[in-house]
Length: 89
Image 1 (cartoon, rainbow, N blue to C red):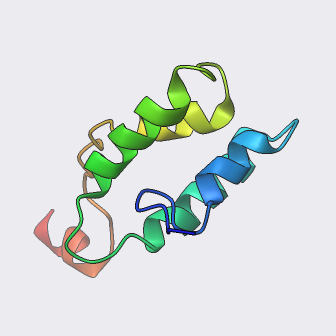
Image 2: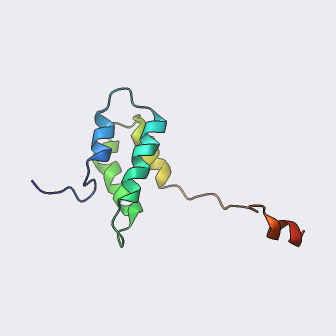
């Protein structure tokens, strides 16, 4: 049996197979998957390929929504607080 290069631990595939799974569980599973992406690989490219594999058949599945959100650009973070932020003001 060969290892799946996109989902070597079958986390994403299993998430799609769990009946009644919710968004919080899917986010947790996705984080576990993302932490396992080998160094040097582009996680966004892998997510796109996972969406190609699973997203069409399960467009409304919570994992599909999580994968789509992973491709969105993050909002820029403003002032985070702390001593340095107070001293500049």
